[in-house]
Every structure is written in structure tokens, then in C-alpha cells.
Image 1 (cartoon, helix red, strand yellow):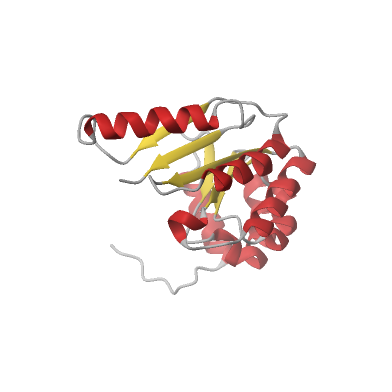
Image 2 (cartoon, rainbow, N blue to C red):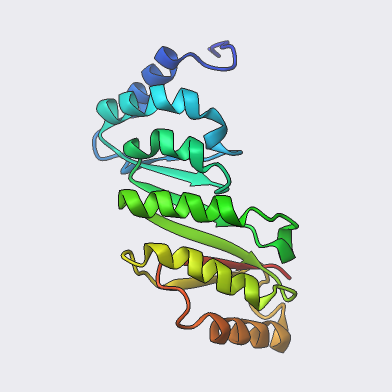
Length: 185
């Protein structure tokens, strides 16, 4: 029998659902994704402390990185943060300052943080250097860089391999924290 519920779901009902699904050993974390979860920061301020108490699970937030003020209100309840850095050459966005501020907040709180970059053949190397400098604020959490391509193996042929090699050469030694690159073709 389907339950009819209004949207948004009330905090008590949401916690009831979490409690029903929280079985020992079944889950190791809870991911807060979106849209942009930080648009719901006032709700998260109420929800996260109760969620932590109820489950004891690792709490991970996925963000676009452009709302550092909202992150500051919930950072104490999180274990890790993943942030997108949308480079202007790929997205047309330019929120460098906000993303730098968000990274600094994470670093100051010593929370685990990683960044994701979407790049293309037209990505400006200066943008990668800025992303490296901003990301290196959290160099106390060094992890390897992973390169993820949207092209299937072999679909990009030698051109894709050549671009990946150029990218690896360009970023080698610049990033001292965890970074995931997604290559658009």
C-alpha cells in the first residue's frame, strides 16, 4: 500500500524513515546530494545532529561549492565534503572566490574534502593552475588524482589518449589533494 505524503516531508517523518532503514552493518555512510543540498541549510541544521545521533554513520555532502556561508552552518555535523569546481572554459561560471572560501572552511575544520573538475580540450591551463592552488589548501589530505573520461575506451582514439597524456603532464605535481577529473569530449 502506497503512503501519500506531502512535500516537503516533515523532520519527524524523515527521521522515522531513516530509523526504519538503518540496519547494523547494512550502511556505512549517508550521502547528502542534490540539486544543491546547501539550499536546504536551515533544514540541515535541524536534521543533521539528529541524523548523527540516530545512525552514528559517516555523513558526506556533495556540493557545487558556491555556498560557503551555508556550509559553515552545518560543517560541524559532516565527515566529508565533495565539491565541484566548474571551470569557466567548460561551464561559463565564475565562482572562484566562493569555491576557494568553501575549501578553506573545510580545511580549517580538518574535514575530509575532495574536488571534482570537469575539463575539455578547450580548458585553459591557467584555470587548472587556479584549481590546483585552491585545492592545495587542503594538502594535509594527499590522495591520488583520478582521471575519468566520458569517452568509451578507444572511442577517442589517439586524440583522446594524447589529450589525456597532455592533461596528466600539465597537472602532475600541481595537486596535492584528492582530485577527480572528468573529461568532456
